[in-house]
Length: 112
Image (cartoon, rainbow, N blue to C red; front, side, top):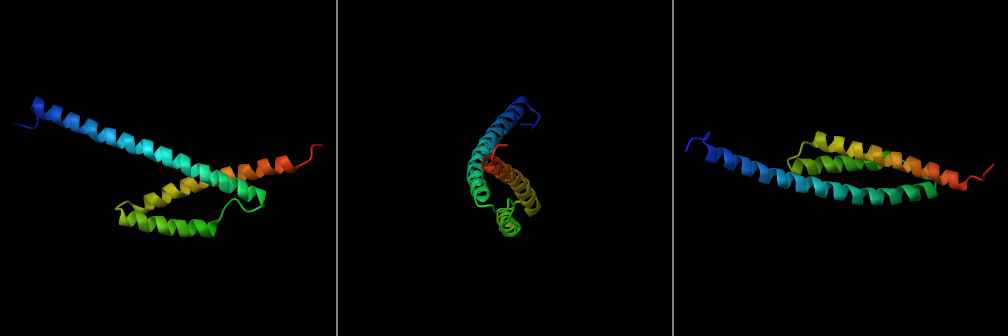
């Protein structure tokens, strides 16, 4: 059977659809995991705001980057990509922490 015959094309199309469904399932799982992660980082932001701690923790971020780069290598994932992903997430988390701190200050400030 020649690869360009209809049966081969249909089989390839069906395989492509199955693979895409798996990718869609993984994307959904990633969104759910990120949502869970942000629930916890929001708790951290509230604690930091409550106790006047800085929104960012560069030492922890450096340790996490090293750890995630190592995990990426072990998983055959580009460590540069893993670091970029982490930096993107951390920037969003810090933005939330800053906002939590500002909201905490607003609650503590007496109205004029």
